[in-house]
Length: 138
Image 1 (tube, rainbow, N blue to C red):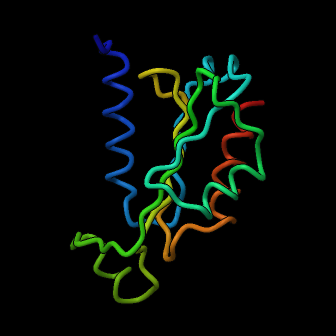
Image 2: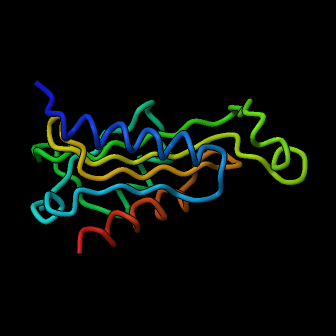
């Protein structure tokens, strides 16, 4: 059964994603206490992407037997239909994708990183997400 505290944190993070969707800033959420216990990670990329996998494996030695799962995903070729962002759509490059990185243990989300992109996620985007994770692991 999912605790109400986890549901509240999930709802708050979802609200942050909605409020910052189609923006240039990354959104990071962490459970700093649980991050102190992370000593290994296994990697899951969905949907499978060779570029993201290669980039992530250059940054960390993943362990398939680890209880902590680092999930990495990206999407490109999307459009934001919010009228709130009309000025951004008209006057600048507008996000057409995102990169997302989540670290979890079982159903407990420990770290989340989300950033809108104007391109398909590449090695630099993976490095930025991983840098945000490493910064919080200290």
